[in-house]
Length: 431
Image (cartoon, rainbow, N blue to C red):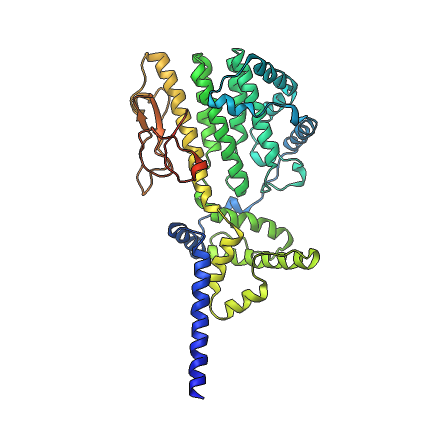
């Protein structure tokens, strides 16, 4: 009898530690130790979230009406016929024939009514990315915008940028380019997808800006562009993706609260407190969907979760659910910093071009650009560990650059390419 009890006890202990090990391996396998530590900190510590993140914002009716008007025009565009794919060729420096330029000019004229309204729309003081949705009156301020619509809108503005530049209409070219930059404006409390869309639009716009600057020597137009881009920097580069875990939880809870008034959105609670509410809601929602639509899910059932919690795996279960239901959110930090670095080296490139026009030589350090072009120094976001460092300068190519996500200075000899991996080798420059 004693042997049976001892065996049963050892079996229970083995099962306990086996489950403990497997769950931890499942969770940790999806993250680096650094990412896992950030996730644990988010769950255990009090969330330092600004109170305005907990409140929805209603859009002005005039903004909604303009957005609806744009949506109607967009839906009537024949998107199949436009030469959007030529944008990549232009940026690569491929030879563009006169026949191809004629097609671009025709496309731009065909879409001019749309881009005219879009450029005016983005100039509204209350404009922000999530307002430009397909049916904005049906969406709350935290709803993700229509990605395809935003992508096409940005590309339409880029085509107009290149077409105007080819015709020597530099002011119109920069106005279309700046409208594309303005599209990326977003409030800090909107969701992860909206931030990633904004970062993608921002990066595409920076490539077009650099292409323009390399060809334009109109000092007045360049100066106007620099001043607007510096103002937009405060609205576009909202570096909230350092708090992306908090943002994701709070944004999802906004939606849960619409159907469940008992959800507690009081600021100052721990991440674990908020996520427990979110987890319960997700499980209830999945259970209902399974029942109504016979939908299968990879997440464990509420019954399985309750058993795991009963035998002491509550924290591991929370971490597992966190990692499965919100994949890749930590990589958003790299995307945001990449967009920020590319935006700021574009500003530096533009200021350097103006400096060269005025002084007859290129700046050698950031201080050369102060105070004529910048009031304060700007720092490379990839220099971390509490250290601030200005962007490096490549004397041979006469441009400033960022050390990139790998945080190693490659002397601007290796261009960073996110397709090689978000934290891959290489530096970030404007061109």
